Amino acid sequence: MDKRAFQFSPVQRYLDRIHEELLDLKDGAVADYIPELTRADPSWLGIAMVTVDGHVYQVGDSRQSFTIQSISKAITYGLALEDRGLDQVLSKVGVEPSGEAFNSISLEPGTGRPMNPMINAGAIATTGLIASTPDAPPMQRILDAFGRYTGRPMAIEETVYRSESDTGHRNRAIAHLLLGYGILDRTPEEVVDLYFRQCSILVTARDLAMIGACLANNGVNPVTGVVALQSRYVEKVLSVMSTCGMYDFSGAWIFNVGMPAKSGVGGGITAVLPGQFGLGVFSPRLDAKGNSVRGIEACKRLSKDFSLHLF
Ligand code: DON
Image (tube, rainbow, N blue to C red; front, side, top):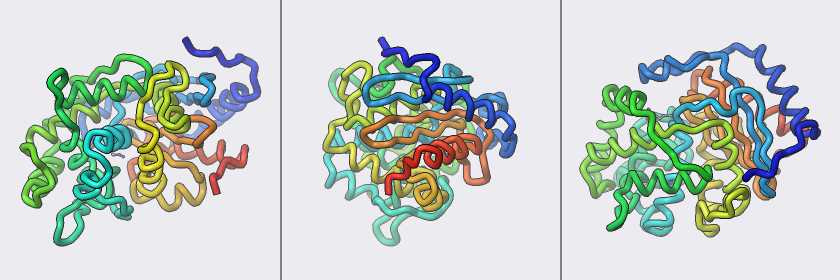
Protein backbone atom coordinates (compact mmCIF):
# COMPACT_ATOMS: atom_id res chain seq x y z
CA MET A 1 0.00 0.00 0.00
CA ASP A 2 1.07 3.58 -0.62
CA LYS A 3 1.93 5.72 2.29
CA ARG A 4 -0.87 8.24 1.83
CA ALA A 5 0.47 11.72 1.44
CA PHE A 6 -1.30 14.22 3.67
CA GLN A 7 -4.06 15.85 1.69
CA PHE A 8 -3.13 19.28 3.01
CA SER A 9 0.62 18.93 2.79
CA PRO A 10 2.49 21.82 1.13
CA VAL A 11 3.54 19.54 -1.76
CA GLN A 12 -0.05 18.53 -2.46
CA ARG A 13 -1.19 22.15 -2.25
CA TYR A 14 1.55 23.18 -4.66
CA LEU A 15 0.61 20.45 -7.17
CA ASP A 16 -3.07 21.40 -6.86
CA ARG A 17 -2.17 24.99 -7.63
CA ILE A 18 -0.02 24.34 -10.70
CA HIS A 19 -2.65 21.90 -11.95
CA GLU A 20 -5.28 24.60 -11.76
CA GLU A 21 -3.06 27.21 -13.38
CA LEU A 22 -2.00 24.92 -16.22
CA LEU A 23 -5.60 24.14 -17.18
CA ASP A 24 -5.59 27.57 -18.86
CA LEU A 25 -2.66 26.62 -21.10
CA LYS A 26 -4.23 25.36 -24.32
CA ASP A 27 -1.32 25.44 -26.77
CA GLY A 28 -0.31 22.41 -28.80
CA ALA A 29 -2.25 19.61 -30.46
CA VAL A 30 -2.99 15.95 -29.77
CA ALA A 31 -0.78 13.62 -31.87
CA ASP A 32 -2.55 12.53 -35.04
CA TYR A 33 0.07 10.59 -36.96
CA ILE A 34 -1.19 7.42 -35.27
CA PRO A 35 -4.97 7.62 -35.90
CA GLU A 36 -6.02 6.09 -32.56
CA LEU A 37 -4.11 8.75 -30.58
CA THR A 38 -6.55 11.42 -31.82
CA ARG A 39 -9.16 9.95 -29.44
CA ALA A 40 -7.41 11.53 -26.44
CA ASP A 41 -9.28 14.35 -24.73
CA PRO A 42 -7.09 17.47 -25.16
CA SER A 43 -8.24 18.84 -21.81
CA TRP A 44 -6.80 15.95 -19.74
CA LEU A 45 -4.17 16.99 -17.24
CA GLY A 46 -2.79 14.70 -14.56
CA ILE A 47 0.21 15.33 -12.32
CA ALA A 48 1.74 12.86 -9.85
CA MET A 49 4.82 12.79 -7.67
CA VAL A 50 6.28 9.80 -5.83
CA THR A 51 9.07 10.37 -3.34
CA VAL A 52 11.88 7.91 -2.66
CA ASP A 53 10.31 7.22 0.73
CA GLY A 54 7.12 6.10 -1.01
CA HIS A 55 4.79 9.08 -0.56
CA VAL A 56 2.40 9.51 -3.48
CA TYR A 57 0.88 12.88 -4.41
CA GLN A 58 -1.50 13.22 -7.33
CA VAL A 59 -3.94 15.67 -8.84
CA GLY A 60 -6.35 15.93 -11.81
CA ASP A 61 -6.45 13.13 -14.37
CA SER A 62 -3.63 11.24 -12.67
CA ARG A 63 -5.55 7.93 -12.90
CA GLN A 64 -6.48 8.34 -16.58
CA SER A 65 -4.87 5.63 -18.75
CA PHE A 66 -2.98 6.46 -21.92
CA THR A 67 -0.26 4.76 -23.93
CA ILE A 68 3.30 5.11 -22.69
CA GLN A 69 4.79 5.54 -26.19
CA SER A 70 8.42 6.65 -26.15
CA ILE A 71 8.78 6.69 -22.36
CA SER A 72 8.96 2.91 -22.82
CA LYS A 73 12.36 3.43 -24.45
CA ALA A 74 14.02 4.22 -21.13
CA ILE A 75 12.68 1.03 -19.55
CA THR A 76 13.61 -1.28 -22.42
CA TYR A 77 17.08 0.29 -22.51
CA GLY A 78 17.55 -0.70 -18.87
CA LEU A 79 16.25 -4.20 -19.55
CA ALA A 80 18.58 -4.62 -22.55
CA LEU A 81 21.52 -3.53 -20.36
CA GLU A 82 20.56 -6.16 -17.79
CA ASP A 83 20.11 -8.83 -20.46
CA ARG A 84 23.22 -8.17 -22.56
CA GLY A 85 25.60 -6.05 -20.50
CA LEU A 86 27.00 -2.62 -21.31
CA ASP A 87 29.54 -3.58 -23.99
CA GLN A 88 27.15 -5.53 -26.15
CA VAL A 89 24.46 -2.86 -25.93
CA LEU A 90 26.97 -0.10 -26.75
CA SER A 91 28.16 -2.08 -29.78
CA LYS A 92 24.60 -1.85 -31.17
CA VAL A 93 23.32 1.57 -29.94
CA GLY A 94 25.29 4.76 -29.22
CA VAL A 95 24.76 7.44 -26.57
CA GLU A 96 25.09 10.65 -28.59
CA PRO A 97 22.18 13.09 -28.90
CA SER A 98 21.04 13.19 -32.51
CA GLY A 99 19.65 16.74 -32.50
CA GLU A 100 17.05 15.35 -34.87
CA ALA A 101 13.38 14.39 -34.68
CA PHE A 102 12.42 11.18 -32.88
CA ASN A 103 11.63 9.32 -36.12
CA SER A 104 14.79 10.40 -38.00
CA ILE A 105 17.07 7.81 -39.50
CA SER A 106 19.93 8.87 -37.24
CA LEU A 107 22.45 6.10 -37.84
CA GLU A 108 26.22 6.41 -37.40
CA PRO A 109 27.86 6.58 -40.85
CA GLY A 110 29.59 3.32 -41.68
CA THR A 111 28.41 1.15 -38.79
CA GLY A 112 24.67 1.92 -38.96
CA ARG A 113 24.59 2.09 -35.16
CA PRO A 114 21.67 4.30 -34.08
CA MET A 115 22.83 7.48 -32.34
CA ASN A 116 21.03 6.77 -29.05
CA PRO A 117 18.33 4.54 -27.53
CA MET A 118 15.76 7.33 -27.08
CA ILE A 119 15.06 7.90 -30.79
CA ASN A 120 13.01 5.34 -32.73
CA ALA A 121 16.01 3.80 -34.52
CA GLY A 122 17.86 3.25 -31.25
CA ALA A 123 14.77 2.03 -29.45
CA ILE A 124 14.02 -0.51 -32.17
CA ALA A 125 17.63 -1.77 -31.93
CA THR A 126 17.32 -1.89 -28.13
CA THR A 127 14.08 -3.85 -28.24
CA GLY A 128 15.81 -6.30 -30.57
CA LEU A 129 18.25 -7.02 -27.73
CA ILE A 130 15.63 -8.06 -25.15
CA ALA A 131 16.26 -11.70 -24.34
CA SER A 132 13.78 -14.51 -24.50
CA THR A 133 13.90 -17.04 -21.65
CA PRO A 134 12.44 -20.56 -21.44
CA ASP A 135 9.65 -19.19 -19.21
CA ALA A 136 8.92 -15.94 -20.98
CA PRO A 137 9.05 -14.52 -24.52
CA PRO A 138 10.44 -10.96 -24.88
CA MET A 139 7.03 -9.22 -24.73
CA GLN A 140 6.19 -10.93 -21.46
CA ARG A 141 9.59 -9.92 -20.10
CA ILE A 142 8.95 -6.31 -21.16
CA LEU A 143 5.52 -6.29 -19.46
CA ASP A 144 7.03 -7.86 -16.32
CA ALA A 145 9.80 -5.24 -16.24
CA PHE A 146 7.28 -2.39 -16.59
CA GLY A 147 5.26 -3.99 -13.80
CA ARG A 148 8.27 -3.95 -11.48
CA TYR A 149 8.54 -0.19 -12.02
CA THR A 150 4.84 0.60 -11.64
CA GLY A 151 4.08 -1.99 -8.96
CA ARG A 152 1.09 -3.39 -10.84
CA PRO A 153 0.39 -5.75 -13.78
CA MET A 154 0.62 -3.99 -17.13
CA ALA A 155 -1.50 -4.39 -20.27
CA ILE A 156 -1.39 -3.31 -23.91
CA GLU A 157 -4.03 -1.06 -25.50
CA GLU A 158 -4.87 -3.27 -28.50
CA THR A 159 -6.51 -0.60 -30.67
CA VAL A 160 -3.53 1.76 -30.38
CA TYR A 161 -1.19 -1.16 -31.05
CA ARG A 162 -3.10 -2.07 -34.22
CA SER A 163 -3.28 1.56 -35.35
CA GLU A 164 0.44 1.93 -34.78
CA SER A 165 1.20 -1.31 -36.61
CA ASP A 166 -1.06 -0.38 -39.54
CA THR A 167 0.69 2.96 -40.04
CA GLY A 168 4.26 2.36 -38.80
CA HIS A 169 5.94 2.00 -42.17
CA ARG A 170 8.78 4.35 -41.35
CA ASN A 171 9.65 2.27 -38.28
CA ARG A 172 9.57 -0.88 -40.45
CA ALA A 173 11.94 0.78 -42.91
CA ILE A 174 14.29 1.71 -40.05
CA ALA A 175 14.22 -1.89 -38.79
CA HIS A 176 15.14 -3.19 -42.25
CA LEU A 177 18.06 -0.77 -42.41
CA LEU A 178 19.20 -2.01 -39.00
CA LEU A 179 19.05 -5.60 -40.22
CA GLY A 180 21.10 -4.60 -43.26
CA TYR A 181 23.77 -3.14 -40.96
CA GLY A 182 23.86 -6.27 -38.79
CA ILE A 183 22.38 -4.45 -35.77
CA LEU A 184 19.36 -6.79 -35.50
CA ASP A 185 19.57 -10.54 -34.87
CA ARG A 186 15.82 -11.07 -35.32
CA THR A 187 13.52 -10.33 -38.23
CA PRO A 188 12.53 -6.66 -38.59
CA GLU A 189 8.86 -7.64 -38.44
CA GLU A 190 9.31 -9.42 -35.12
CA VAL A 191 11.25 -6.52 -33.60
CA VAL A 192 8.92 -3.72 -34.76
CA ASP A 193 5.95 -5.73 -33.57
CA LEU A 194 7.49 -5.83 -30.09
CA TYR A 195 8.30 -2.12 -30.36
CA PHE A 196 4.71 -1.21 -31.37
CA ARG A 197 3.40 -3.27 -28.46
CA GLN A 198 5.77 -1.73 -25.90
CA CYS A 199 4.70 1.76 -27.06
CA SER A 200 1.05 0.74 -26.57
CA ILE A 201 1.37 -0.26 -22.91
CA LEU A 202 -1.22 1.57 -20.80
CA VAL A 203 -0.02 3.78 -17.97
CA THR A 204 -1.25 6.66 -15.82
CA ALA A 205 0.56 9.79 -14.60
CA ARG A 206 0.88 8.00 -11.26
CA ASP A 207 2.65 5.09 -13.02
CA LEU A 208 5.03 7.56 -14.69
CA ALA A 209 5.82 9.11 -11.33
CA MET A 210 6.44 5.64 -9.89
CA ILE A 211 8.77 4.79 -12.80
CA GLY A 212 10.66 8.02 -12.11
CA ALA A 213 10.74 7.26 -8.39
CA CYS A 214 12.34 3.83 -9.04
CA LEU A 215 15.08 5.56 -11.03
CA ALA A 216 15.42 8.24 -8.33
CA ASN A 217 15.69 5.47 -5.73
CA ASN A 218 18.65 3.64 -7.30
CA GLY A 219 16.44 1.18 -9.16
CA VAL A 220 14.22 0.07 -6.25
CA ASN A 221 10.46 0.66 -6.30
CA PRO A 222 9.93 2.80 -3.19
CA VAL A 223 6.44 1.41 -2.52
CA THR A 224 6.87 -2.33 -3.21
CA GLY A 225 10.60 -2.65 -2.44
CA VAL A 226 11.03 -4.63 -5.68
CA VAL A 227 14.18 -4.05 -7.78
CA ALA A 228 12.96 -2.52 -11.06
CA LEU A 229 16.46 -2.02 -12.49
CA GLN A 230 19.85 -3.23 -11.26
CA SER A 231 21.49 -0.29 -9.54
CA ARG A 232 24.63 -0.41 -11.73
CA TYR A 233 22.52 0.52 -14.77
CA VAL A 234 20.48 3.34 -13.21
CA GLU A 235 23.13 5.98 -13.96
CA LYS A 236 23.30 4.79 -17.59
CA VAL A 237 19.54 5.10 -18.11
CA LEU A 238 19.43 8.50 -16.38
CA SER A 239 22.36 9.71 -18.48
CA VAL A 240 20.67 9.02 -21.81
CA MET A 241 17.45 10.50 -20.46
CA SER A 242 19.42 13.66 -19.57
CA THR A 243 21.05 14.03 -22.97
CA CYS A 244 18.46 12.52 -25.34
CA GLY A 245 15.15 12.00 -23.49
CA MET A 246 13.29 15.00 -24.91
CA TYR A 247 14.40 14.50 -28.53
CA ASP A 248 15.65 17.61 -30.29
CA PHE A 249 14.53 19.65 -27.27
CA SER A 250 16.91 17.78 -24.94
CA GLY A 251 19.52 20.56 -24.78
CA ALA A 252 17.04 23.29 -23.85
CA TRP A 253 15.34 20.91 -21.43
CA ILE A 254 18.41 20.04 -19.39
CA PHE A 255 19.51 23.69 -19.57
CA ASN A 256 16.22 25.00 -18.19
CA VAL A 257 14.75 22.18 -16.12
CA GLY A 258 17.90 20.31 -15.11
CA MET A 259 16.36 16.87 -14.51
CA PRO A 260 16.65 13.66 -16.55
CA ALA A 261 13.32 13.05 -18.28
CA LYS A 262 11.58 11.12 -21.03
CA SER A 263 8.53 12.10 -23.04
CA GLY A 264 6.07 10.22 -25.24
CA VAL A 265 3.59 11.24 -27.93
CA GLY A 266 0.74 9.94 -25.76
CA GLY A 267 1.31 13.13 -23.74
CA GLY A 268 3.31 11.72 -20.85
CA ILE A 269 6.56 12.95 -19.32
CA THR A 270 8.54 11.19 -16.59
CA ALA A 271 11.12 13.35 -14.82
CA VAL A 272 13.56 12.23 -12.14
CA LEU A 273 15.28 14.07 -9.34
CA PRO A 274 17.83 11.46 -8.21
CA GLY A 275 17.62 10.69 -4.51
CA GLN A 276 14.37 12.68 -4.19
CA PHE A 277 11.38 11.85 -6.37
CA GLY A 278 9.85 10.86 -9.68
CA LEU A 279 7.36 13.13 -11.41
CA GLY A 280 4.73 12.05 -13.92
CA VAL A 281 2.76 14.55 -15.99
CA PHE A 282 0.11 13.67 -18.53
CA SER A 283 -1.47 16.13 -20.95
CA PRO A 284 -1.96 15.07 -24.57
CA ARG A 285 -1.49 18.43 -26.32
CA LEU A 286 2.01 18.30 -27.87
CA ASP A 287 4.37 20.88 -29.29
CA ALA A 288 5.99 20.55 -32.72
CA LYS A 289 8.74 18.30 -31.33
CA GLY A 290 6.30 15.79 -29.85
CA ASN A 291 6.58 16.83 -26.18
CA SER A 292 3.58 17.62 -23.95
CA VAL A 293 3.19 21.43 -23.71
CA ARG A 294 1.70 21.42 -20.22
CA GLY A 295 4.05 18.62 -19.16
CA ILE A 296 7.06 20.76 -20.02
CA GLU A 297 5.55 23.76 -18.25
CA ALA A 298 4.75 21.78 -15.08
CA CYS A 299 8.32 20.48 -14.86
CA LYS A 300 9.79 23.94 -15.58
CA ARG A 301 7.73 25.53 -12.81
CA LEU A 302 8.52 22.84 -10.28
CA SER A 303 12.22 23.04 -11.06
CA LYS A 304 12.26 26.83 -10.77
CA ASP A 305 9.97 27.21 -7.75
CA PHE A 306 11.96 24.70 -5.65
CA SER A 307 15.41 25.29 -7.21
CA LEU A 308 15.62 21.66 -8.30
CA HIS A 309 18.01 22.12 -11.25
CA LEU A 310 20.64 19.43 -10.75
CA PHE A 311 23.50 21.72 -11.66
O1 DON B 1 7.49 5.20 -33.03
C1 DON B 1 6.46 5.83 -32.85
O2 DON B 1 5.98 6.48 -33.74
C2 DON B 1 5.73 5.84 -31.51
N1 DON B 1 5.16 4.64 -31.22
C3 DON B 1 6.54 6.32 -30.37
C4 DON B 1 6.93 7.71 -30.59
C5 DON B 1 7.01 8.62 -29.46
O3 DON B 1 6.40 8.59 -28.42
C6 DON B 1 7.86 9.75 -29.81
N2 DON B 1 7.67 10.78 -28.87
N3 DON B 1 7.72 11.83 -28.69
